[in-house]
Amino acid sequence: MSGSSQKSGSTPGPASDARQEESAHRAARDFYGSLEDHLKARSELLGLETREAGEILARKAALGIAAVALAFLAYALLLTAAVSLLGRWLASIWPGVLGGSGWQLAAIIAALLHLLLACLLFNKLKRKPVPRLFEFTRAEFRKDREWLKPTQNPPGSESDSSP
Image (tube, rainbow, N blue to C red; front, side, top):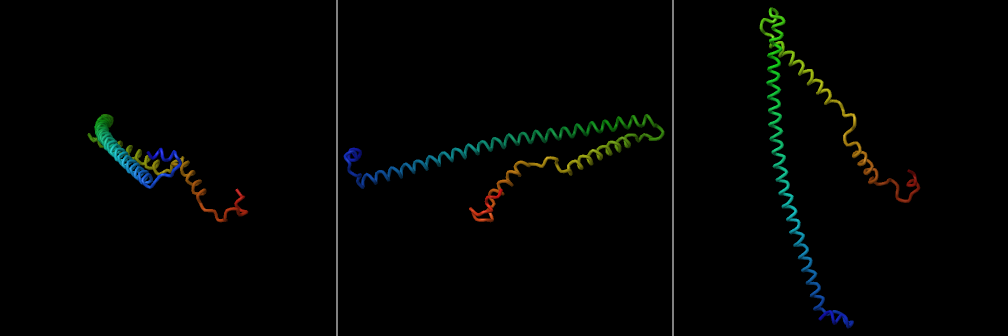
């Protein structure tokens, strides 16, 4: 009905304005309700994915810890066997000199080698990396800082034309 009154050139009445306003409010409520539902669904999905990622990372961490523990155990057993065999070999070379304590000499040699390797690795850690980390990102941040820095002279002054 209101469509026919508009065709004839008459202006819409106050009842028509109230209906349009009510429909606009209803559309806004529906929109915000839908937006709220959408955001709730997204947050639930994010929560599910976060829990799933946490479980995956926990499994990987547990496997990593187990692998490191087993590798350390294997290394310790190999080192023990190497010290024992090297001690027997040293005792067979100098039977009277070492007096059956060849394994102690082998353990000292192994310990000194490990200490030397550890010192070399610590020195390598102390050195600064050759390429600076995040070099390009820092350069971009410097450019952004320069670009955002307020100019000392007001805009349009003569010193603005200099590079």
